[in-house]
Structure formats: structure tokens, C-alpha cells
Image 1 (cartoon, rainbow, N blue to C red):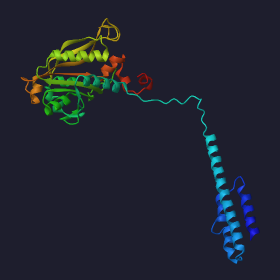
Image 2: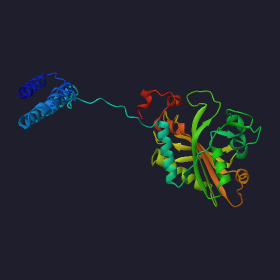
Image 3: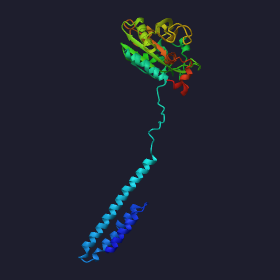
Image 4: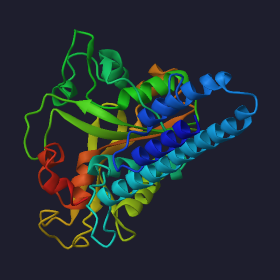
Length: 337
């Protein structure tokens, strides 16, 4: 039996030394329940009491040898596998990396955020409302009754006779005045819709930012001061503004507001069409009928409102001459921002 054990050790050693040795198969062959070494140990009962201790010691030595040899070969195989993996996945850190395109804000979103930040800095709150609106909030509550000529210039998309896509964000102002009593100081940015033909300066979908202030003692002077602060912050400290008389049904008095051309300083250039001024918004004092319709006494409170197209501000700020560029998703254009 001693010779049998030595033979098992020799054969196991030879098999474990093979490069592609199947370690699990070798373990089962010699150490498994039906393995050769296990079979030898089962026959130890046939030995004399004097032989058993010596043969048992040799058997344990052979088992330990095979177990250790298998464990050592497993370590070697894992090390070799790791080396092969590292070699296959080697990276030359001295080579230049692959450029990754980083996203950024669309110029419309960028300018809208700038505008919001300016007004928030002046104490305004940002309020949003539904784009699908009632005719009442879009027109009637803004002193534009049925058959009023102002509806022609704001012709929008009707879903029913009383429900439409809003043509301005002014309905948000009405909804705010119905729910909140003065003092009120809000801006309402968002998408609006009008049935305009698409060209360099018109689109059936565009963006507006409107503002409203209602409190005791509000005057046109407050409106002018606020708009001057906005213009200087948005376009530069040297920017000037001017009011031109105009008519809006929901404000009285009303004005169109221009800013001095920041490209030529008011001297006249291609950007301002040699006028020295660029129109950016409309504004005025809130009409008493609008206040009264929202449950606010115009004898006690007054207010001003203003509205501007965000696309117009973007085009003015970045000297863009075609609004369609903002919607075509051409990366050659958008990559400049």
C-alpha cells in the first residue's frame, strides 16, 4: 500500500505540472469521494494495527501534497490570467484622449435664464401657467372683448370657441391677480402661439417673458427705472432706453420701449438699421378695467406690465438676423453658443 500511495503522488505531480492541467478534474480523480487516494484510505482496515499509523501518515502527507499543489497551481493560473487580461487591456496613457462633446444650454434657454435672474434680483417671482388657455383669460380679462380689433393681431389656434393656445403669457398675470392681492411682483416666461407665417422674424410658436407689478403708488417712473436696470444688466451699462407712445388694450398709458444699439452706441449701423435704437418690448400702466375685473380697486392700487419676446432679445444680443436659426437644430449654428 505504501507503493500505491507513492505512485498516486507521482502521477498527481506529473499531471499537475502540465501546462493545461484541469485542476478540478485532478482533484476529483484523487481526492473525491470515489478518488484513488480515498479508495486507498478505505482499505486501511485490512492492515495490521502496527502498519496503520505509518501508512496513515503517508496517506495524509500525500493528501496534503496534492491539495497544496492544486492550490499553488490555481494561484499561478489566476496570476497568468490577470497578466493576460492586463496585457490585452493595456492603455497607453501618453496618447491623446477621445474628445467628448459636452452639452450646453440652447441660446433661447440661456437668455431666458439670464432674464429671469435679472428680474429675480429685483424682487420678482417666476410664475408659470397653462399653454392651453380659456378665451376669457387670453382676451376678455385683458380688456379685449369679442370682435375687438386687437384680436386680429394676436390671432391664435383655437381648440373650441372658448379654448385656445395662448397668444401671450398675460393670462398668467390675470390668474395671479385673481388669487393674490397686492403687493404683486411677478414675471411669467413661456411658450406662446400665433397663426403667423414662418419667416425671418415670425414663427407660429415663440417665447415671451411678461412682467407685472401692482401696489399702492406705482407710476410710469417705476416702470422706466425697472426697465433701465434690466437693459443695462442685459446689454451693458452704457445702454439707454426710450419710450414711444403706443396703444395696448390692457395698459393705459402704453408705450413701445427701445434700447440704444449696443453695437454702434446709437450712431446707426446695420444691426439697428441705421436708427440707433432697437425695439425690444411693450409696456404700460395696467388698465383700470383689468384691475377691476380681478377684484383689485384701481382707486387704491396701480400697476405696470411689460412683455418682450425672448427670441427678439436673443437675436438682438447675439446679432442674429433670422429667427429660424433658433429652431433648426443646426450644430454649426448652436455650437457658437
